[in-house]
Length: 125
Image (cartoon, rainbow, N blue to C red):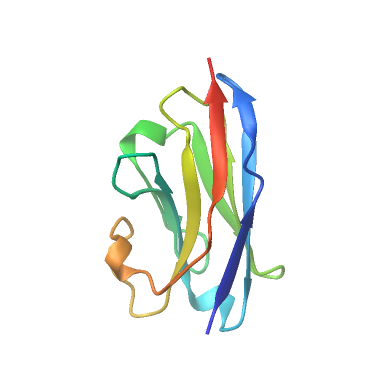
């Protein structure tokens, strides 16, 4: 069983930056693909970025590529999401999720086996 705890969400002005963190416990962290998802009020949950166990292979939602960067520190069992140039359309509850091998598609929420509780990001214009 894997437990995931996100942190780092807060209110920020448009154009600002945030770094979200997700600490994992249980399981073998380095083997899991990790995804960052978000869900805005009234909208479906969507994947914004994901990366494989080694961190070398990454995926981005088109609208965040160039602004958001996922990374991981397997020694600390932690995955990060660096978010730059935040926009008014970025506010949401941000979740991290873990996908054990065999991996599903990066962007497919159904592929992920474990989820955190989320951390709220608010962007003011």
